[in-house]
Amino acid sequence: MKRLAILAMLAATPAMAAEEHAVPFFSLHNPPFVVVIAFLIFLGIVVKAKVPGMVGKALDTRADQIRKDLEEARLIREEAQMILASYERKQKEVQAQADRIVAQAKSEAQTAADQAKADLKASIARRLAAAEEQIASAEQAAMREVRDRAITVAVAAAGDLLTKQMNAKSANALIDDAIGQVGARLN
Image (cartoon, rainbow, N blue to C red; front, side, top):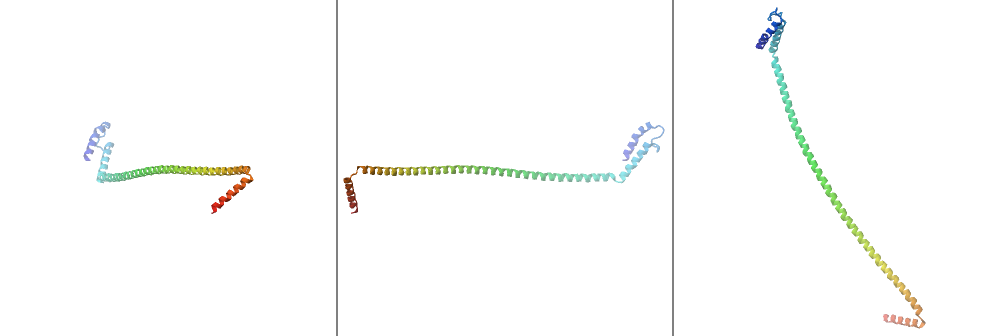
């Protein structure tokens, strides 16, 4: 400190001397000299009051606080990265599960569609079989009706023919023949 003050005085002396020729530099009437002395006294008081130590201590305390804050920020960042990684894993798991659900739904839909097609084919086959049975039954009923009608028409035609060709003698012969057949069957 003293060296600094002496250097400041020596450096200021030629410059100050050039400005004012009449007043010597080391005089109390010279304002720059008074300012230098006041500055040196101020520096002495600052050093005596241990201000540089307090400033250093305050700076060290602040540096420690900044270090603690940085460490805390680093820990928070690491925790945030772990949480982010956890959420990304969960997101991937959820995406995989969603993909599985979609695939299963597609598979079930395909199975249901295949089953519906098979059920439709079976239903169509049953209806065709039922229709064929109805057609066959209707055909048999029509054949019976035609046969019965043909028999009725034939009997009526035969009756008409017999009635036209029949005389009393052939009627008696037929009656006698029918009685004979009935008698033979009963015995």
